[in-house]
Length: 267
Image (cartoon, helix red, strand yellow):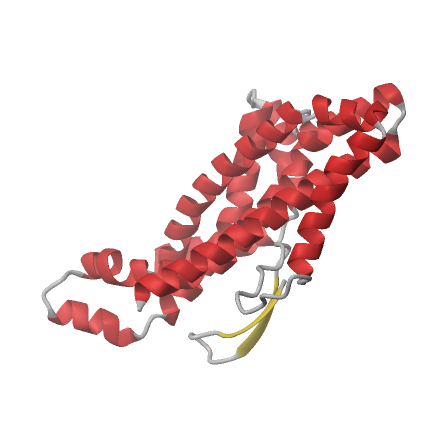
């Protein structure tokens, strides 16, 4: 997904490309919209293939549910910690305290400069030389730390997008900077950053397939296990791809609905 925005700090126009699924346009009411074609097409194939050819498609569907659960488990826990890390990092990036600002900035630059797969290998295999790291803990840690850096930039941009007069007005009413940030700035920021956070959630959901490398039994690994024992590689990966597609398109629609509701509440 590509978005065009203006950085409030520099005034420069930026084009941002995200790995997340495209959030459906609320104004697009066509019966044959791109989202409807993609979502219902994938859902239809998931239903049709097992009916037409139960062996192996129905067997694959019966084999992967625990992998779907593990995928959601890794994703939800990781996004929870990534949001906490991102909020702290975003606040650090706009902090007037030089040391805090530098630490947050170095963290963002370092983490964003290292691929997620390398971070996963480093935490599980490299650090495993010195301490025993459970594979689930390693997977969640790597994804939380990686996406926390991206979330930090989203929070920073969202906070800086709020007019400075909001902070000045809150301070004039006798609030401390912390109270103003918590009660005035952050609630407004959440409405702004919901779409990019939603896209990061979807991107993290897809990137969770990388945890299969460290033997976490997610959706992809369960599909690989079935394929390796039956040699139905085409059928297994077709079903895995369709399941991922249905899930990501479903959540892209959910993000669009939440964004619309937040806008209505803000009026």
